[in-house]
Image (cartoon, rainbow, N blue to C red):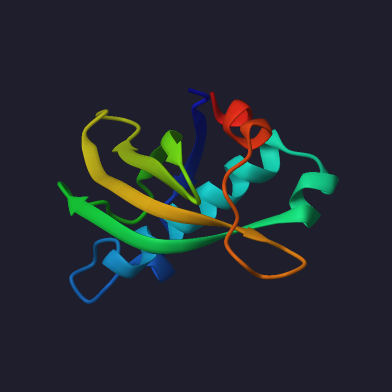
Length: 129
């Protein structure tokens, strides 16, 4: 399993009326890091051949993040079967290492030409192992 990590500094625009990161922003970060992981592990040929669409998100909010906090995001693909792939995303306060968010997302592989679901080929499964 290949883990992809990045860090984000919380900006004022990320906050809600309670002055902590808006839950919707976490969902955006889940999608963003999934896309970045895909791009980091693949070449243009694969990126033009395949697309991923979200089927579902399950998110557990465990702590708050405030402006100027540095958040460490980690993601990996837990498993793939048929047309579906399960991705885990964890977000930590990088100073305290406290888990803030854990998300499990289900993705479907799409043929970019036909826009139809596609069984995940071994070459794609191998990329994330």
